Image 1 (cartoon, rainbow, N blue to C red):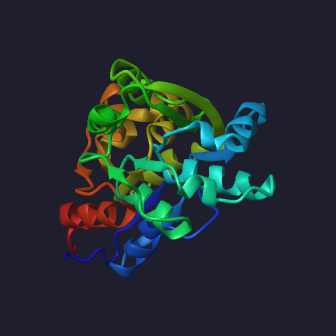
Image 2 (cartoon, rainbow, N blue to C red):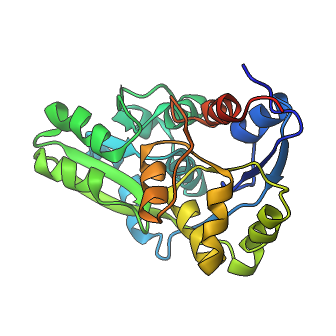
Length: 257
């Protein structure tokens, strides 16, 4: 694996805990600047989530589209003093390997993992199993529609509930990225979600073209699509859509020197 000695990578994912992307970049010798573009907040109204968690026996499947959704559901079960065993007894599906790892670490291995880390792929993989079944979909307030629409088309009885909110970092904080790039202090910027892409693009405003001068790395196709929609080019995409693989993809593109 190529080394990243003397290369600087800006990581825009939300902070607050262990980060495989940051750890792997530093292992490869990169200088990492953490500039979280988003943070996570509780749902505006926890009532629907709480009601669903108190009645998990009503569901056949629970579908997790992110590791954050896993954490929020299990944390809320703890807040409500409810046993996670009721969740473990259901069929559990996840969107990709990072979400699978989070679920495995906190509860158990998933019953189904999408072949690609996209909502569309997860809905397609679930389609043969969910017709007429009751599916709980904990998601962010601004969650994309692909999973919900795909499951409904497959004949599932889907209950989408807001499990958390994605909150953009104040633009004045993110705007520091522009001067860093102008000063040639950045070699790559890593994005782990479409929300992070949108927050950075909004913060840079007319200066967004500065991003054309550095490597832009995406954790998966959905994030890469968000870059494309913003008029930007993705230079590296993680093979397995995990933080470790994203770091390796950056190293493969930048290499030494």
